[in-house]
View 1 (tube, rainbow, N blue to C red):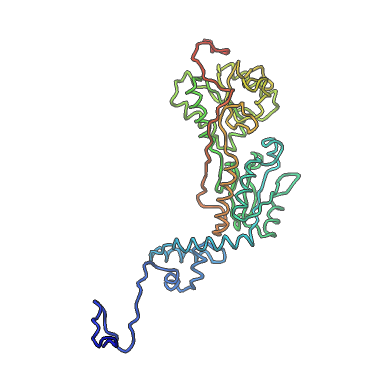
View 2 (view 1 turned 90 degrees about the vertical axis):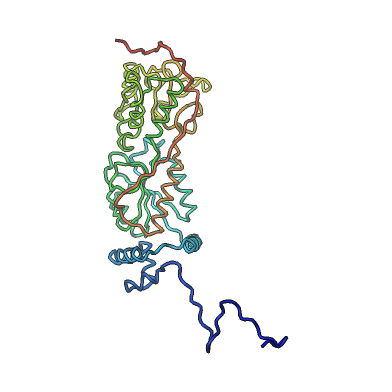
Length: 393
């Protein structure tokens, strides 16, 4: 009975009369939760949470039970909760950021302008580390520097859980680090054991792109010259790229790649010059910066290749497979070294925060592509039968 007009109120459609006390509304859950997993296998929900994040405090057997139970009941992570946790952990990381060990090889100084690592790779790794609230510290391994055993002691005593391995020479085939309690990623150095996730420039793509662009510009006798140890630590990717492109070329235009030992520059120069003349090479492609002489005329892009009589721009054209930032006259492939460092650090940061430790069962490889840059060392070539080093019957 209404107190206002004295009439009975009309019941709402579907409304039920309460008996004694209001009926409790039951909300149906849309998806299984971690509490369901915990109840299924008889553990605490916190244990389930840690196990799903591969936390090392949870025994492996328990982690496997949790994963099996989650698959059985169809548990799926909540993306909204993940976003909240990411924000929460990101705020906490600004207060207690972790240290990442950037491990370098003292023997690589001839590769990187006298340093033990590529400066652009390190700059990228450092930028990504700062973005993820990590600090980065360089540790140099070598006969006159740290031994792997000493490095192990330092890493474990300081509680470091993430290791980024920089480029290593072939002199170091294995690095005896205790990775069972570490997250680790390496840069290049496919040969280096243990085999873990690797991030590298895509040298195969670089070589293929260079050959395609040069052929489009009219060049036909395209020759690759590089050091044998460069190819070995890079998984033979430069030569692979050239050979893949040569599979679609006439046999008469295929120049066999030149792989030389890392000896003195005069000895290397003599081998390169003899190879160029014997194979009538009209354009040299290489990752070697030692072949970049000082240009006589930067606008014309001409110089003599050191320790040879080969004049770039007159006797031979030149395309770098790793164009230096300080040589705008040089045409070729620009490798994105900074992005390699960034991607490696980003990948390592994920492994550290998700408690992935030890070498993976199936290591992955991330390849960062380069891009072509025009320069005065390469011009559009008019097809002609004349060649300074023409092949003779």
